[in-house]
Amino acid sequence: MIKLALTTAIAVVAFSATAFAASYSVTEISTSGIKRANGTWKLSTEGDKVAGAADMQLDNGSVVTYKIDGKVEGGVYTLNLKDRTDGKKDCVWTGKPNESGKVYEGPVQCGSEKFTIRAGVQ
Image (tube, rainbow, N blue to C red; front, side, top):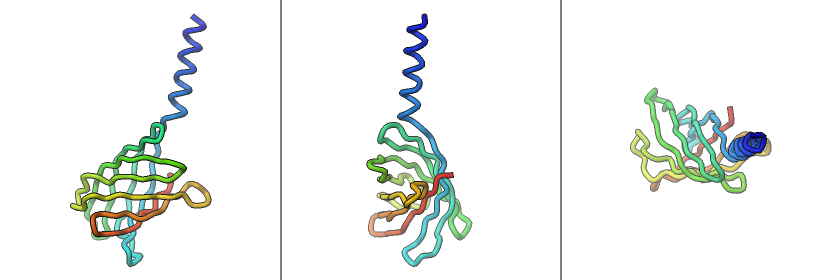
């Protein structure tokens, strides 16, 4: 009985160490430096795999949602921003951490359009 309880406890700790969820405060910034959208990302990470969803509000008041999937390697996120309700296609964000490791920033490429995303852990 003790062996079963110990094995279960070890499995729970091992799983918890490799999977976590976090909420990020996110700003999309156009190439001219104007804030284009603000909102949140809710991301789950298991190993190097990342998945989640975004709820954003454009500067004109419209709401944009999208799905997120990708990976994190060496602290750098490479995320696909899929099914965007604003019609942007083939969007990929590469976010690198700042000195504190709590804010990630980097370029987004959506076809021929580019902008920047800044995401901070809430």
